[in-house]
Amino acid sequence: MKHDWEDLQQQLAQAETELAAVKTRLHTVIAGEEEREALAEDLTHLAPQMKEEIKRITDRIAEIEVEIESRLFNWGALKEVFWQIVRFTGLGIVIGVILQRCAGC
Image (cartoon, rainbow, N blue to C red; front, top):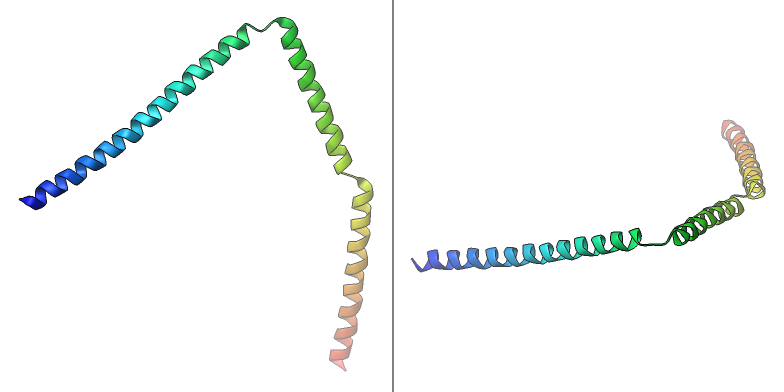
């Protein structure tokens, strides 16, 4: 009989722990929803000139990203890598032919 009470107490403690976790998640969700609503309300109250400024800034950010990507991707760098691949592949083929002929001797 004592064993049954211990199991019941353990299950009750586990249920309380899970309930506390659910309450914590619920409070987090409610706080997030309230924050989202407040931000949405703030967004609707922005002046049109602020919206235009935000659009101008986001457009400029997009232009800068393209510029940075074009600087990172350089055809000159690819040309150097290409010739290194050609050089070492050709060298590998020559060494392979030499080794094959030596092995055939």
